[in-house]
Image (tube, rainbow, N blue to C red):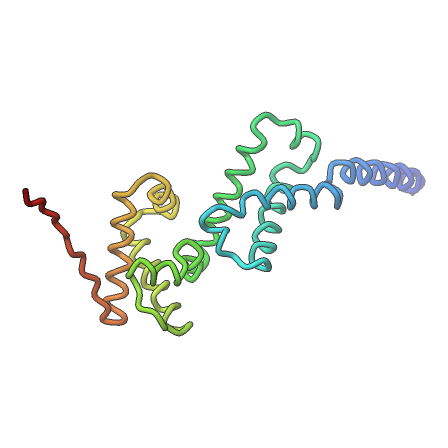
Length: 192
C-alpha cells in the first residue's frame, strides 16, 4: 500500500509533464488563424470561388483541422520542405471529399448561372429542379469516372474531358426537363 501511495505523486508529476509537452505541440489560436488566412488564397479555385462566405469558412475550418491533425507540431509543419504542396493536397482531398459526400456540391464546380449561359440548362429552374439536375449529373459523373479523383483530374487536364462532362450535363437536362441542346456547325465560305 505504501508503494502505491508513493507512486501516486510520481504518476501525477509524470502526467503534468506529459500534459505540458502535448500542449507545446498543439497549435495556438494565432497559428490556426494564420493558416485560415493563408487559405483565403485558395478562394480563386473553381470549386471554392462559388462558395458563400459561410460555406468557405466551414471549408477552411475543415482543411485547418486536417492540417493540424496531420501535422500536430506547428513548428515542424512550418519548417517542412514543400509545406504548400502538403496544404494543396489537403485542400484538393477536402474538395473531393465534399463532392463525394453530397451530389449537390457539384453546383460549386458548375454553378447554375454558368450552366444557363452555356446553354446546358434552361433559365428559371427552381431550387428543387436544380437539385434534381445536380443529383442526376453527379450520378452520370460517378458512372463515367471510376473515382472522384479521376473526375477531378479530367477537369484539370483538358477540353476532351470537358466536352464529355458537358455531354453528361446535357443528357441530364434532356432527361429531366426535355431540354435538348443542339450543336449547330457553322461553315463559313468565302466567295471570290
